[in-house]
Length: 72
Image (cartoon, rainbow, N blue to C red; front, side):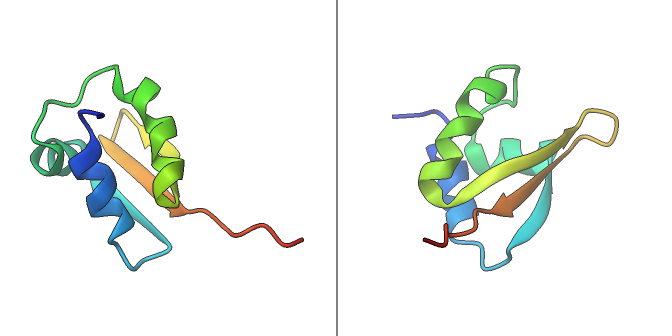
């Protein structure tokens, strides 16, 4: 169980294809402080159909994008 499971579930329930969350919003949703370990944990997000597209330290934003289904 990841410390970011609450955050991943929130993101998975989002209807938008692409959106941003501030660091502060992420901390409130996840219920834990955002720290450097987020960089390791972010790969778990693909299990929920999303990916971290960009992290802006300057603006304290994380841009998230819905994964596209592969066309075979």
